[in-house]
Amino acid sequence: MNKLWALKKSIWVYHLCSGSCNNCDIEILDCLTPKFDLERFGILLVGSIRHADAILATGSISRKALPRIKRVYEQMPQPKLVIAVGGCACSGGIFKNAYNIVGPFDKIVPVTAYVPGCPPKPEAIIDGVVKVINSL
Amino acid sequence: MAANIFYFIVFPGFLFTAVVGLLVSWVDRKITARIQWRVGPPWYQNFVDFFKLLGKETIVPRGAGRIGFLFAPLMGLIGVTLVSLILWQMNLNPNRSFMGDVIVLIYLSILPALAIIIGGSSSANPLGAIGASREMKLILADELPFIMAIFTPLVKIGSLKVGSIITYQLNHGMMFTHHLSSVIALVVAFLCMQAKLTLVPFDIPEAEQEIMAGPYIEYSGPLLALFKLTRAMMLFAMPVFLITIFLGGMQFNGWASGWSVVKYLVILILIILLKNTNPRLRIDQALKFFWLRMFPLSCIGFVLALLGL
Ligand code: SF4
Image (cartoon, rainbow over all chains, first blue to last red; front, side):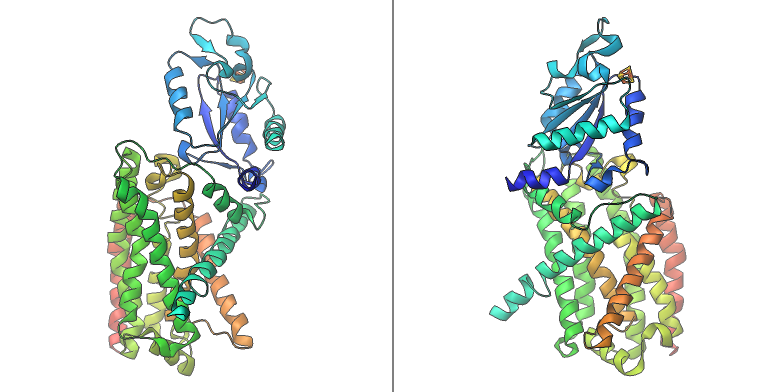
């Protein structure tokens, strides 16, 4: 109970890009700019997966990225959340039937929330994170 | 005995330093946010972060040196607690001072850096090892001018006790405003303190953008919380050290208490401004800066102090 109270107020996110077209990643970085300022809610972008509470995952997963994604997920300390950002991460998006795509994220790791859009607006990403917080 | 344990754990030791440290690192985050035209986190953010990290899983990576990995954060925490404890005891009652306590303080203030080196190099991560080696070079760089600068006012009054320098300043006014040698020494000590706190421009060991979090990279959960707490407490203890030596110490009777807080806040804000207006140096630039610029400067201060200025 107490743990979750603290987790709600301070979610540190790790940005995992696995074969996205880089547009979703730019929108994620947008959330940290003065206009949206996620640090107000205690959300920080961290560089090491060991410090993270949530993965912001972008991109449809290519064969090359697959083992790395599994490894990154396993290296994360409990409790762990995954937020799929963008159409690619939610469902495969425009790369859905490509030869080298192994899946949207929920085939590989359990996903807590989906943020659709190509790319989603920063408001949508923030909304996704807020929904995750409320569902805890 | 019971009183000593109380001093160590509650006031002015661990709890006091931890709470104030977390508050002042909020001030740091808030002012940084305001400089960047953001709103910034609420005042309790660092406490929440700390409790959240306590509730997370601790992972010891495969191939890591277990003992070093697990005990390093504790060692740093004990070091900074003792620094703060000794400083506050003397500020509250200068008669408690003992012979050579400055040397003890300087030694203890290296402990957090040593903890980072031990933790980083036992974490079996290449980036951690790079961070640890950079931290080692940074200590080698900043320690020499720092010690010279701290000893300058002590040479001036001819005593190795923190207590006697506080009483001297109570009777004759601040070292900083009355002696040229102390002005030089304070500038040097301030820049060295920035390196000891590993803040920009000297945050080379943990350089977020190049080696992620450096020595902290493999730490998770409670151990990371201890490291974060140590950093926050350093941000409180080190400026108090400088104030005690150069700016007349912290007194808490009547108007003097407000003045003490103002002195601390001025130093804190200077640190934050320096941090926010500078790019990060490379490690070789930092070495050159401390050895070729700061060390000669501190030598000049030292000689001036010997001449009685
Ligand atoms: S969802 Fe659209 S913007 Fe995002 S990575 Fe896929 S193609 Fe690019």
